[in-house]
Image (cartoon, rainbow over all chains, first blue to last red; front, side):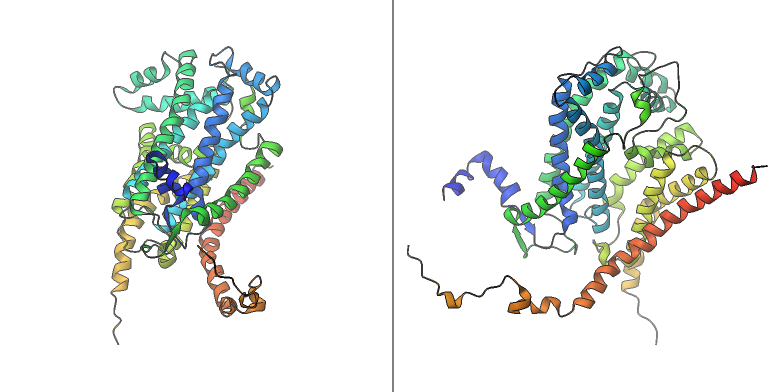
Length: 386
Length: 72
């Protein structure tokens, strides 16, 4: 009884309502564990980032060597840095799985539009944070990646170049750019944390979706202990997966060119972003026009944001949508292929594959999602003639 | 508040569902359940794995043929 009275205190009651006694549909599968796992990734990134910032120097002459100082001189510095660098990749793996689960089970559908929209905003903030974080070690790929991506703003008519100079804080990627990127890289994770709280609040307003996609009002159990333990299984498996990369393949997900100090006079043969940006990068490169490429990147996120409103299906879970299930898996294949194309040179046959994959990417969101729901409804009411 | 004692003979030992038969129904439709579980991943294989591997293999063959045709 003492425990219960303690949990009725104003602040703790909020924690209790959302993390302990939260009514959870009893049929949630392991696919529902990636939300809490993403929260853990964010905490890991913030904690390791705070300690790395104690030893890092955001200056073009010192940034690269300060990272090497962390690796060689700081006690446990290598661990902190590998955890932070690989943690970003792990965070994206978890969030992409979380997103694809939402797509498959229709978690974006009414009444959870706000949950989805806040989720897409969190993804955008993550992409921004990861991009500017990759610039901080000031290696070759940091410098040239920053140059390529910030130069995309110059494609905007009339004001493009002014925006680019404003982003750089000068006339090229230089010390001012590195300083502002460091400042923003420290700030943005806390904004992501705030947005995550909004994401959870919006989710708990109507409750979690479930593998059947139906309302689960009558069949719910408290989050603790049932789904805490289920999530815990996922956390342990994730910890093993994460540890493998930290201890055995810490540079497998990075680019070797980033161990060369940034040199504005020497452009690398192939400039590639981190793996989690490759699908979007492939879409950008599949369009020969720079402005159209930038617009296509914008359209990727607009499509994601519009998803709850252009979806016409009355059924949420793809378990009961055989046609959508096939299109969904083709979409997964499409994203994997785009990711692979993104790190290939711009030549045949990669160009054509990238273009076809980009067409399917947008067709899935802007053609199949809106029309498939209507087609399914027509099939449901179809009566064959004798 | 007193608690009523539970007689040991009334306690059903349910560690193994095979021995007690409490969850006997769970395994009754096992082939059907497994077919449904595997069937759910059939689409993932045919529409997810095969297109990915197929397109990748097409590109590898294309590059190889291109290399061979420029060899001499």
